[in-house]
Length: 82
Image (cartoon, rainbow, N blue to C red):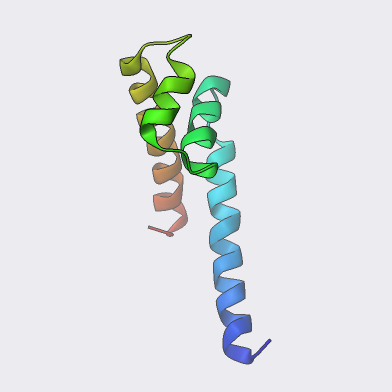
């Protein structure tokens, strides 16, 4: 690894660690499952809705996505990532 690559690796490793911490701050298991399905597994919004509408409504799924994204964003703002 070159010196520049080592610097970039160290920088991105810290960002990845903060993103993982932000993800762990989501308290509701269902919100975490929906966020993991949508963003970590890189599924489309429509597929996420189809997967979870059997147990909850579309509006509820969208609210839970909003809660999860807000939780992650708030932590990343406090950590100085965004």
